[in-house]
Length: 113
Length: 112
Image (cartoon, rainbow over all chains, first blue to last red; front, side, top):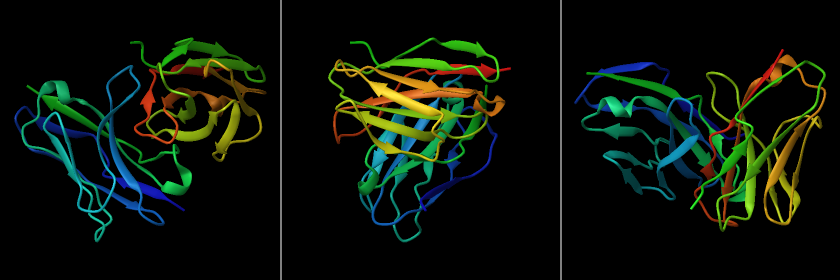
């Protein structure tokens, strides 16, 4: 079956540090890949997405590249802010199960001033 | 433009009871999906509705059922509540076969 594996948290960083959250996946076919962010007490917000190999999704300074050869979709940001403190979820969706997202367990990121 | 709205925001029920959670999709969206997010875990897909029918279902027992109304709003019903049903229940909407999913802020269900 399909699955998503993320690095465990919490990840604690100082403001302006570089952030990387690793995500690897297992899926049949060619899934679309997503990063969602969840702030305390809120639902999920789409951060970025990529729908085919070598696509790079980007938003708000975050980037992730769809790497088919390594089945990975690592999230990066060059300089984090305190406001980036949240839980980040990697997810996939396959074409034969449209609308059904398979999520990783989430990675909590804590950015300190 | 209102996004996805869910009600109630919090709910406390006793084991064995039944509960109904409600979701209004974002304007222009006709497809609604429900997810269960246990504490410290990623959301798990429960089921998806469009055209008032259940189209996909995840690995959840029949105690979990749903409904979609002609105005696209949706309900999630859970019967015979168990302690393990305590979770954040998220509703997501989208136009048919288009991404991304837009999520509501969820309903926090506590079963005692």
